[in-house]
Image (cartoon, rainbow, N blue to C red; front, side):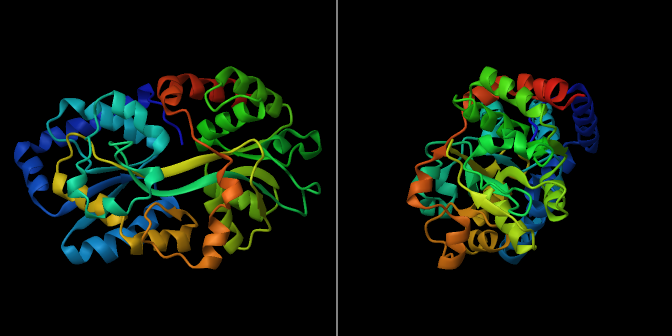
Length: 353
């Protein structure tokens, strides 16, 4: 998911701020006092499932109304940064990935979370402890695996490097909004760590020579796999399970280079207009029923220890002890400092031409 703030996004964000400011302080105070929560999130499957598993069954009976404000991360981050000058912003909760947090944290626009206000925080698995990352409440997690169609890819892949195999030329799919993770994967293929950008750039230019197909979204890649336009890619294991459930002829492999971890969750802007609503949403997202619902519907693993996932499903979406040893965490500080450079290279050199 793109994290770049460009001029057009900034102009749109400032226009939005102007509209909110025109409502006047009384409207802002009214929003803060009521039971309305503005959730800034991705659209697509994730947004729909948040409504299905969090907003309607958990928060609605408690009197809360959740309004989804859907946009890509780049636009939402731009808006959050632009709203720093306002006493009250326009969102109560930001749905983000762990890789988005460092940039916003360093900009001083996120609330340091008060664990006393999260009843379910005590159930969070230690690996994802809020105490270790106090600006981010985790929601779900998975890892980046290799997906392949055995009909199109005759040699069973062993790692990410198989995307670079000349035998697979023209059969590889890449997701544009996952450029950060693809760049980190390229760094691993080149023998580096997730923050070794120079190694990643060289590897990506080599991949470009093999004519990978670039798709704008995860959903677009899913369609390409379904129609067998492509037969090889890297993707979250959770998404692979979703697509298998939808009938795609794909299998997964834990890459020998490393399993890049993915954690999505929520943050609260410092100037959130309805702070009570912000904490209510974060706590609801940690409910065992919510975590179980996302495991069943989206294939992501729970971040709380009290969620009960059937053994068969856990085997499909989870990771063996041997695979867990392959987990690689993104270099978050590097990504925060290098987001613009990463996106610039991706657009102007990898995608161009």
